[in-house]
Image (cartoon, rainbow, N blue to C red; front, side):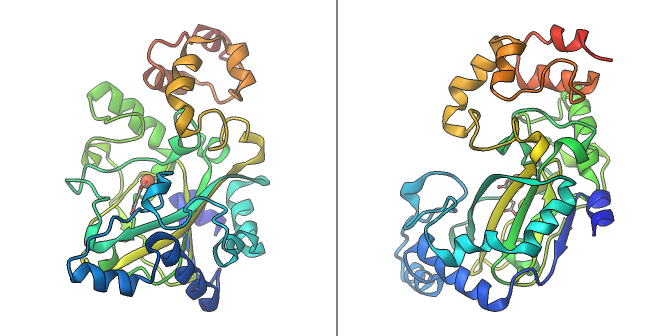
Length: 313
Ligand SMILES: O=C(O)CCC(=O)C(=O)O
Ligand SMILES: [Fe+2]
């Protein structure tokens, strides 16, 4: 499994959770997001009652009936983190003791879902920026973290499985560097046109109830529309990083979304010494290479990287 994870940047492991656990978790998740079962939400929807529904992905708490961010207060969901095999798999793929980054409910509701790109080639991105503001490095094993989605029900081809680009986790830094040069970036995490990146074709992450998908935070992937719009897709997600990277890789750090509009300009202008107070690796750290420094210039326009450049080996 480790070989497969390191080669492809993802792996879908079946039977990490039991059917009984998943059915209970799905009931709880529907309650938190719809305030009722999905079957009953769908009945209402088909009768023309279009209540707003959150995807749980953001922290916009007003869109959901219960809570979407971990811990949600319901043991049928919160207890999923206590599965030893699941935690062992994180540890295996991370190559270090895992450290918590973030976890939340992630729902896509077919009839109202809009969480997919306009063009099939346009939505490819890495999720790394959710927990870490440092751009991808060639050394995915050391500096990326691991995202996971637990499948609370079967996800078939018509149920909007995620599209994963095999092997892209070790190529993301290079694809981004080329992308900045050639105008193929759409923001710090998104490739404008994946066809120009010279990567393998994407694979839909179809899987059975009780499976856990693990994927590198450097893996390029995208969403697709539901072929069957009556379906929902309910994942319980958890992200964890290596213990030895958790000073600069966590959602709960100063780079948490609500603070970013203040932190990012501050981090851009301040000194390396002060950046390190907030977890940034210091000049001379192996994260810094000619390539990551090039990417940092795009991620933090105007930043003075000379102290990091001078400390390159
Ligand atoms: O919903 C999906 O299939 C992928 C979503 C995604 O990649 C994201 O929201 O970051
Ligand atoms: Fe994503």
